[in-house]
Length: 310
Image 1 (cartoon, rainbow, N blue to C red):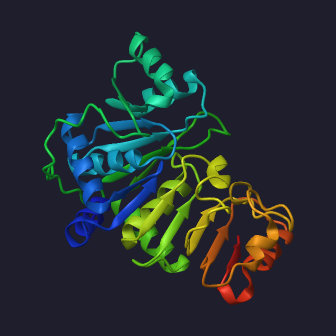
Image 2 (image 1 turned 120 degrees about the vertical axis):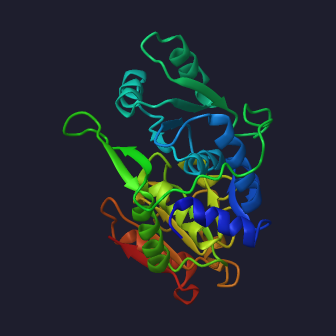
Image 3 (image 1 turned 180 degrees about the vertical axis):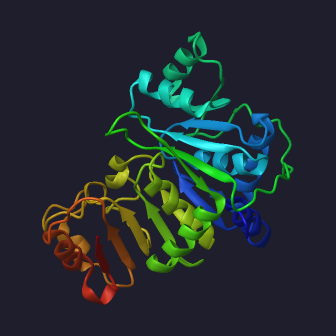
């Protein structure tokens, strides 16, 4: 396996019906993700080495575009949707992006880009929430066929620019694959796992964690944004989520008596069979000792909950 695209091709061939991503209330199989990325790859009409920017919240389409880039030799540039318009255009210009794919939730930004005389890239709007009527639908589902090398750049992700202008960090396919292998081993993610990602995919944490699930061939539940934790995949209707990754602010393991969306006693009564969370990993900012304690009080020591504070 030499690239991030090889792993998708392999899983699509081996278990095309297996669920790769669950996002926006829809399940996307490995075969679906493979076919979607093929169509997007043809539709992008870019050459090897081109930069393709993506502006949008967490969605399965982001990973389809990421895979599409690899299948044509392009490099994806995730954009922080919280940035102001001048900040976005500065990053797009620095990356020299040929195309920008914009979630239709940010259609106003797309219109500004199209009308901006200083912006020369192609702007494509994508409907990530319904996944229908998109500009790539009529393109062939055949694999574009590009085979990236380990030393080819896969992702160009920008820093926050706290010491000046944001800087593009170029991660190669080989470096990404090595990090996924290590993450999967540390977190114990295998093909039978269901992983939950709450981190934004414009950040290396959200992208790498979701790609780790794709590397393992398991299902990843991808939340569009953190606030949805109290919704469908929150505490009220728990799924079997063996692994969760997020920052303390995002995961928000609460103090006893303050579990969102459900009485704490309801969670505490859940048996190990009902709440099969194996690991909650939390890092990036300090986490008080009350949070791991709340997790243990909620799930119980017999549920194999592992608190990782780094």
